[in-house]
Image (cartoon, rainbow, N blue to C red; front, side, top):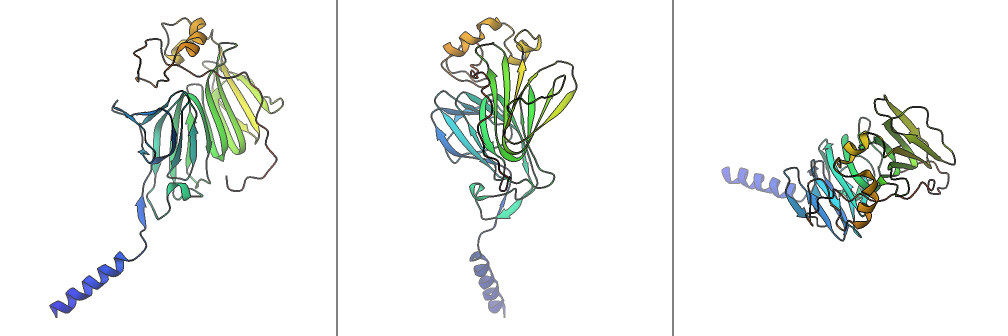
Length: 287
């Protein structure tokens, strides 16, 4: 009898082993594409080169150097491309466990409730947030404001306008829904699909609901007292910032130095506003 029971147990285990694997998955960001120099600065300050296939998590800071780029795919199916001279910190990355045999790249929608907060320290990112579940959120936070992405293709850039010397946050909603949350006075008025707003210290946070195909250029003047604090360059003459952008060879994230320069981080120069990219009218379907 004991032998019969043992045989039955072994037969059951074998049958289970032949079933399709339904892995329990949790939050993560997978590196799907890589070009040039890309470095990870972990929450504990350790540094390492990033490789395709790496899984990133909360607290990781990704620094993309000159003539380089990186592409990420999140556990909710959303994708993000980091352009050259870009630094992004994963501030929050949470997702309820879900079962499935699909890879991150194969997901067409949020498989479970998720919370994603990315901190764009400087540079430019382009992304596509797939359909999010009710209660999920995907936000990109910058020192000037936060872009709340609710299912869309979008672009967010933070850097300098080399002509004016001002710092600019540029948010573009290609399709779907994007809200920009920032401190400013007045009302966002779109002219040719572009609205320009000025940062106002002490103002209450307001939300700009961006229609598809629109861009918001959010500016902080170089003469604003908050300007130096924002950049962490209190000991540098703001008039020299444009020169630093051109002279600096290595792109560095917070606390990361390759050439031991003390000139501060090399922030990318943003071109003057040229208006939003052309998009054909469409109704979002898979965004």
